[in-house]
Image (spheres, rainbow, N blue to C red):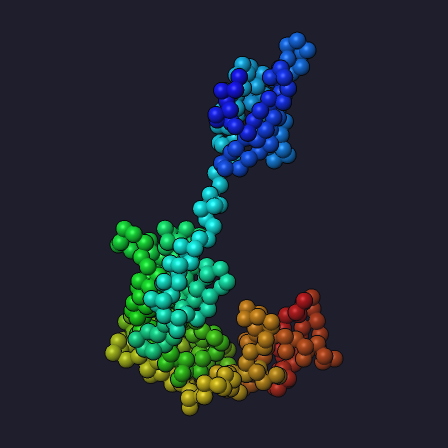
Length: 390
């Protein structure tokens, strides 16, 4: 009668006739309360099984099968074994929480890694040492931040490194490491720095564009950004995207022009002639190649680093109502630029949609049809329209 105790030591008879058993059954290292009533032919009482609310929920989808086995039960030990097997198939296995708890050995290894890397290269670290951010310099003297995410299984599982790279995937891990054992964090950081150094030409290209061109967007570019929006003048601009960050000067960038159709046409034609006549030179920088047909992309003078407003200082690119290029909308995704242009080529003023909407809404001569406002340009008095901001 007690042979099952070797396998289920936490379950014991609850009556002197051996009809009721009560205790705990362990499933995937978690204990569940259980009470079993065997069928009693003398009294006509059917077999039944009770348990915690969680256990009852797990058994509900298999109640008919388990009840059938319990009705035919002749050995409580065999039934408990069948029940345990069934529950282990129902309940997904959980991780061994004790094994995943941070250990002193784990912290000792991390401290040893930091001593090897150098604390002067550590930028930030959270309280649990699961996220470490390191700073490093590439061959061009540029500072990069590399985030190391330390998994609970460290050092059995290597950290994951995240850094800004002009690629589709900016996360690198040690999966591709040729060593059988997991590489050290210092080795992984050296490999990441080696990867960054492969993009020196790209970083040089984008830095020079940011310093010498009339860049409008992005306001705070990331090292992974392969595009820039550059002012041409007269509320015309272009957006360039480098197709190959590894070889930025190998071929002309993808160019898209923005602005009034008549005003932007000369820029489009100049660029098209330049490309079709194969004047692109791989021995020159991207900026020098662009400036040949489009000289207005260059600044007249290099602004001081502290004067962020110099990126948008040009009156011919600012909103003609608020005299700013960007209108803060709370976050970068909701910032407005003066993209509503007066159709009069002699005027060609640009406005933020919300600025023009408020201007027209306050003008008594403005008319409205559905969600469109019809009014006059604040400068040339020509007809201008704007969708209502709901």
